[in-house]
Length: 196
Image (tube, rainbow, N blue to C red):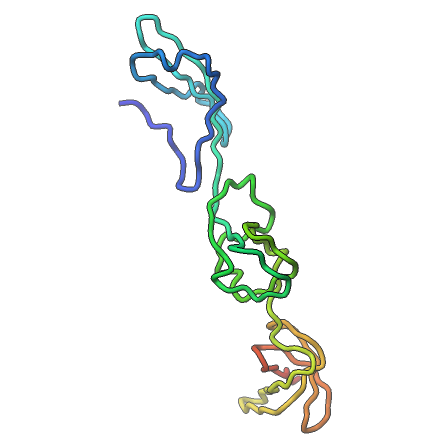
């Protein structure tokens, strides 16, 4: 029984060649037998010997590259800067790893709910450099301030004095006392005041 040399995963493919078109491959009447030419080969490259076992046998050597692939999130259409991404704005495609930019997203779900920081062309790969978290709180917006003191939760009305992303510190004004405090944007319109 011949040993198997196909060690590929589902995320790899072979890139064979080039093979000289003037070779005798088409003239071989028996099935051509491939063999690994050397037991020592690089992780992503190998040399395969193709053997024609006829009365007048012959062989050629062919270079083979093993290329990793990955799913990648791609813009389904042109996306304007400032757009909060929805599932319909994205699609998934399979591409060779050497062709992908740094920071590419391998799952479109990661991008849903994030904001495009710049225009993105239709069909472009999505990267983490193009996206920012949506603002949880915007300057001038009415917010609910929540403070937890010894197991007692206190809620009060406030106004955001700065923009803030989710879990980012923001300055807010307590509308009942007029006092300006810092808190953490926990969700849309909710700022948690950390008591010390």
